[in-house]
Image (cartoon, rainbow, N blue to C red):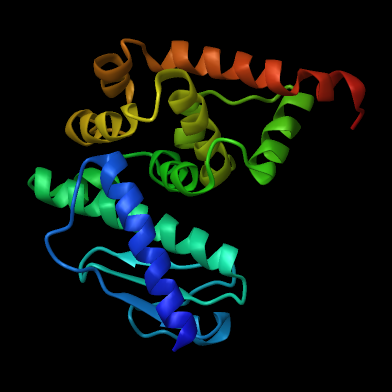
Length: 228
């Protein structure tokens, strides 16, 4: 009971933050289903199919609810609740703004959706993401945004957070809801080029190049001082 009440307070705190940043409010409450631990969570019947050990929670758009296990770490609980609430906002914005909004969500690259949730809950500086970015700089294997969109070998959570951190760091956090809404409106084949042009007055190719240069500047010393 104590943990559930604490999770509720975390959720309300995240809701206030995200509602203000995204310029959006819910019209109905979103249930949050909590499980005592990962083992219980993996046996949930709220959705069909198996849930892997690496799944920390999910947002179900059809019944508008969030499902997750308690981890024993309040910091981890707070992050996952915030992450899934970002997805709840994404679905609600899509469904209330567009016909077949959920289908429009499916057109967006996974890094765009998951990276947004990670950026908005972890912030711009995250040690785990920095480790991934440093590795591709050292190996001289920095992908383009198109690579991250189309190749799942580029983990969408980490690379997505890094791209969003660059975009929001350069243009400000207020571009996040604008870019999301325009991407929903213009993306039909996984490309975000039209949304980038409308909101940022740039294109995917130019942004990819600038992002890559920023990574080299941030982690270049690691590339020259270490060997594989």
